[in-house]
Amino acid sequence: MSTRIAFLGGGNMAASLVAGLRQAGWAGTDILVVDRNPDKCDALAARHGVTTATSIAEADWRVDVVMLAVKPQVMAGAIAEMRTALGRTSRAPLAISIAAGIPLRVLATWLGDDIECIRTMPNTPSQLGVGATGLYAPPSISADRRDLADRIMATAGINVWVEQEADIDTIIATSGSGPAYYFAFMEAMIDAATDMGLARDSARQLVLQTALGAARMAVESGDDPATLREKVTSKGGTTAEALAYFNNADLAATVAGAMQAAADRASVLAQELAEQAADTHNTNDDR
Image 1 (cartoon, rainbow, N blue to C red):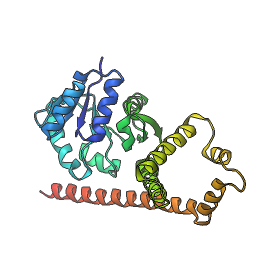
Image 2: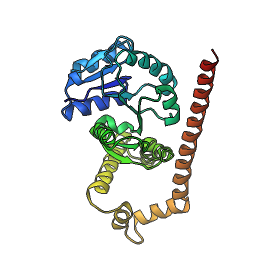
Image 3: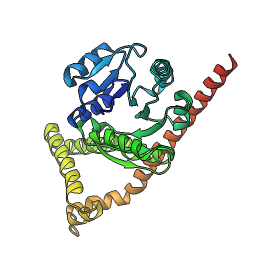
Image 4: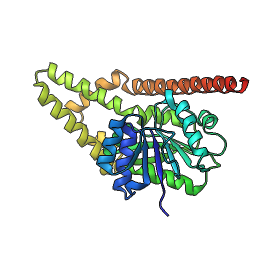
């Protein structure tokens, strides 16, 4: 029996997962994308042969999995509409959240007791099938459902499961925000090479290819990054001189501080969402 998957939201991350699912063998007829933007729906239907809908209320929610893929600020309203539609089907699908910053206790408030939820944090390279996703499932989630979530998210890259939800904040600081760190470093290298006399296009080509080559070596060589760094660093040479400058500037502490700042911000945003959800819940109870 096939597994039917619905995407609540059809943005870039949802589109990446749709592409991965299709490449992994999921039938287009088993994938539903619900997004109020008709252009997004038309593009996904044309490219991947999936079913689409521009109305939550009118979509066919007889599905096994719902991917929660709308922006955090509109998630509560979208889930409320979906819950109404699900009530007409008597289905309780597995929910998989790919929205940043919304903790499970908040999602549970919106989803209700009958819908189990797994929280994930993919990153933007998922759009190319080389993403890195962190996943957390409460202990109550069955092994079969964990496996299903793992298979879905693996279509966009690699998966790493964590044992406690608090670790998702570290995932956000590591792989979620991580691409931007590398982009910033590449940007700085391009600027520096340009300032030193290279044509900007040449600097860009050299920096991007070097980043690609270094990443492939780190992934494919079997050596850890420290070993690879040592292999390309000759005592008294140019690389050693540059790395010494990094060490004197305390690069490690700078990176650690930046990642901690990202994790702290993720925690604050999660708390703010939890408080907003509690206020909304209390308001509704008072009516």
